[in-house]
Image: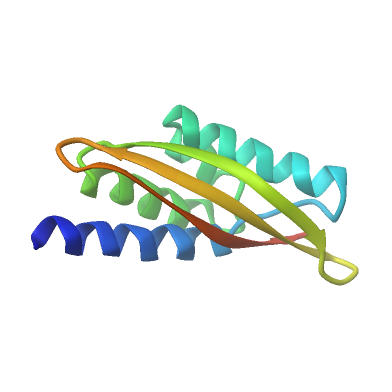
Length: 117
């Protein structure tokens, strides 16, 4: 039961952190920004991924706590879409697949918002 609660908390936390994601604009630049975030997070570079957000310090704390709370789980973050959402924003989706020690694999899709910097 505790593992499930930790797992559910991690899912909610990941969605909240993804909302902070900072992009450049729609199209290839926004896709590149989201790809860079996903690549850093997949490599286990939580602080590097956090640097690509609007609030790096907040995001770093959340991403590090998220992974630590999942017993240093590995995540594979894959960008599944990026679409324009106004002049200075885009929306995207990430497919997150976690491999959690002694629990196994779980995956879900989360939405992200990107803003031109």
